[in-house]
Image 1 (cartoon, rainbow, N blue to C red):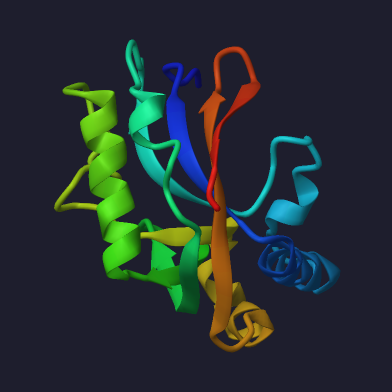
Image 2: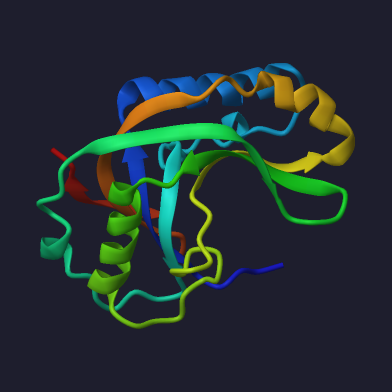
Length: 173
């Protein structure tokens, strides 16, 4: 199965929060469960996806470059998908700063072929922990997800799946 090339704009977390999410990845893997810990490419970092498109011809990075860092709260586990396997993620509790950033990223990108799961009005902010978790394994997986985690939004990056390249767009101060 081939996928269309995808480009995403992602929000990165501070080092402490990133390490806490990686610890959850590691706990899932140590339990023999699906986990993003198995994906060892340098591009694999905990993040909140703000926008996904098959092409991104324009992005007004200057409109995003002066953003201030802000608090990000990772909440309870959330599941996406259907069938006997799901994506296991940490919910991200929407704040006014996060929602404003999401809107600004979409404005900076202009009109395009939005992925429905990141489009304004259809977005559920989250940080993915594992893909393809079997429903029968949820009883073991869910206790491995920690309590609410309060972190800081630190940077924006662009991920181009076709070229497997990452471009840092902005550091949040």
